[in-house]
Each structure stands twice: as structure tokens, then as C-alpha cells.
Amino acid sequence: MWGLLIIYKNGDNNAKKKSKILQYIREKILSAEFKIRNKVSKQDFTRDRKLNFSKMIILMSRKSVKSIQNILNEAETYLSNMLEEDLITISKSAYSQAREKINYEAFIELCNDIKEQFYKEYDYEKYKGFRLLGVDGSMIIIPNNEDTKKEFSTTSVKNQYQDKNKEIVQARVSILYDVLNNIIEDAIIADSKTHEINITIDEHLKKVKEEDLIIFGYLGYLGSGDD
Image 1 (cartoon, rainbow, N blue to C red):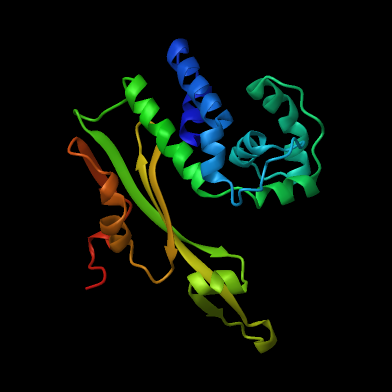
Image 2 (cartoon, rainbow, N blue to C red):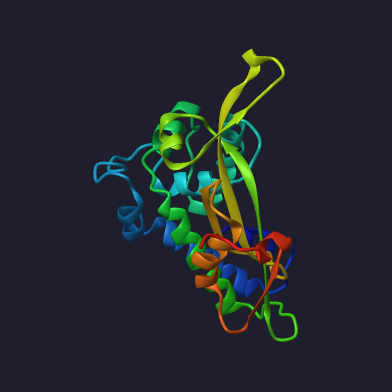
């Protein structure tokens, strides 16, 4: 979804194709089938509340470093236009409660469907007949709690002052990216001890087709992963 919005904002003259894909997004988000598949519980989003399922999907897709309340305030006009309805002012508390009712797989499904629509509708950029894909990754620090510790490894950070020592939870992220068209083809978050090459072989290569050419972020990908 994010890659598509970047392309949309870059001013492509193919208005009919843009309109067709955006209409597809709108119909997908508003569909009952999509909601049923991607709400956590059958009881969720059954009442007519301020923040229904479709509004939450759009709000959670908006990337921002601003506070949640500022995002909600700025999003009112955007959501009203997107969903073609008036939007009542949303509180931070209501947003936080509704967010817990959304299955994360909704965004994976949306992203995959929109990528498919993009490659179907657009004459996308290629390098000598190949779709040019890049692979790169990084380590990130994630919240330290019991749930994250069950899934990811911890690392001790030592300081010259012992009372400043602490334990952090780290994860490895890896991206397979269409570098000419600004589209993320695949994104993986794994345990920090998982080697980059293993993520590429076990996950990213599933997305690669015969007409794709892959470049790697650094020479570490040429090393050996797990035996």
C-alpha cells in the first residue's frame, strides 16, 4: 500500500490507472469478506462505532512520527474523502482499543493485492528487461516485555557504570525491494540471531520470478548461513 501511495503522489499522468487501483483499495477495505478475515474476534466491529474496521485500516496505514492524537486530527478530512462519509472526531483512547481488534495479516493481504494490481496495470520500470530487486537488512531494538522475549533474543548492554547495564530485545529486519519502482516486494522480521542469507533463501526467494535480477546490500550476504 505504501509503495503505491508513493507512486500516486509522484505525479504519474496515467490517471485512469491510478483511479482504478485506488478504487480497488477502497472496495477491498470496505468489503465484508475482508473484515471477517482480518478481525481478531467475531464480536469485534459488530456495532456502529466511531472507529469501524475500514477507518482503522486506513489510519494504521498512515506512516507518521507525530503523536497519535495529531495523526487522528489530521486524518479526518482524508478519511472522509476516502470513505465518502463524515467523520466524527476520534479520541486516542478509542483508537488504541480499536487497534487491538485488527489482525496484522490484513496489511499483508492488502500489500500483496496492491502490488499485484500495480504490476498488472502499469508498464513498470525494468533494467535490461529485468525487474531489479535489492536485498538489505538491519538490526532493530523492539519493546522489552515477556511477549517479545518469547519470540526474539535478548542482548546485554554493558556500561562502565554497572547500575546502567541493561537488557534489550533485538530483531533482524530484511527487505526485498523493487528499486526502480519503489515497491517493497517482501519484508521479514526475525530473531536477531537469524543470518541474512537464511532469510533470503527461506523467505525472499519465494517472491522472486524468472525475470528478476537481485542485488545485495553488502558482502555479508555472500557468506554462509546456517548449515
